[in-house]
Amino acid sequence: MKVLVINGPNLNMLGIREPGIYGAETYKDLLEYIRSYCENDGTDVSFYQSNHEGDLVDKIQEALGVYDGIVINPGAYTHTSIAILDALKSVSIPAVEVHISDVDSREEFRQISYIRAACISTVMGKGFAGYTEAIRILKEYRKTK
Ligand code: DQA
Image 1: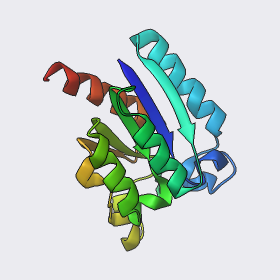
Image 2: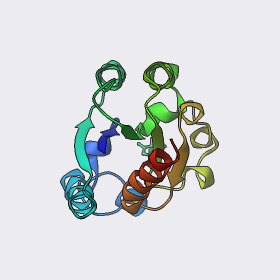
Image 3: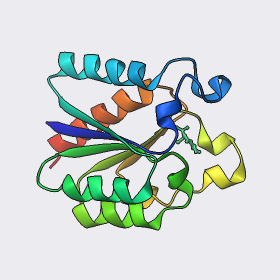
């Protein structure tokens, strides 16, 4: 199974940004964590991070016919981006929304997700483990198709 892990704005700042919320580990640590899980699991994984909404839309469009699943942490665009929602709907690739923090227990504006309507599931508040949980969900979903 080919999975694309997309991270949106400021996730490249993991380890530096608000460590009390997002932890002390870096974006590089995150990629190593996911890569090692996928090696054991036999999942073919690729990564993409951008701080720009249009680049995220481009990457989702380019995933069509290439990836079997998308894991996406859209960062702050979660709470604003109809363009990312539409891109996910356009390609119809099964997608799981991930948040490192528990967005539902934070500010009210973080409790709104424009992306969720295009995702088969959402994982939040589980730190880095949320990404591997999302890959597990995609694999299970695939078996039902
Ligand atoms: C986040 C939560 C968002 O509200 C925030 O803007 C982020 C990270 C998370 O992973 O918990 O950038 O998506």
